[in-house]
Amino acid sequence: VQLVESGGGLVQPGGSLRLSCAASGFKVSTYDMYWYRQGPGKEREMVGIHHSLNGGPWYVDAVKGRFTISRDDSRNTVYLQMDSLKPEDTALYYCRTMISGHFYWGQGTQVTVSS
Image (cartoon, rainbow, N blue to C red; front, top):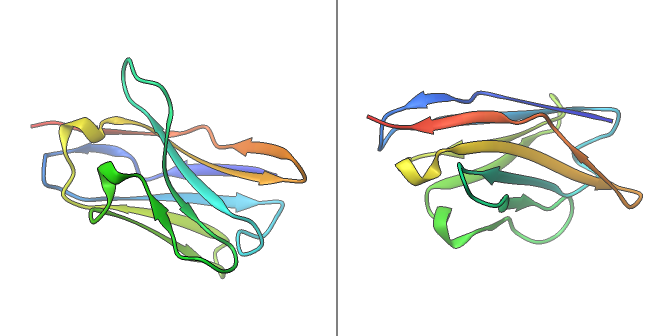
């Protein structure tokens, strides 16, 4: 099982980025996929969840209406579309899944929102 995030970078406030989480060793369509972030001096927090089966996505209040999680089964990849970015969104962003009771994390991709 491997998760590889990409798509981070430096963006101005109000800008957009799309993060990718490419999975291997399992099908993203089969498991819930999570996005987390950890900002400077902050604890890691859950940003959103893409459920594999029933139920709509879930987002933390701070990103509702601005972030969208989607999935491309043909690419076995989950995305985090981030719009209207704010300086407080600056963080290292990770994707995560849980398979058979084990957590699997990617290495993270850095997002910096600054003018």
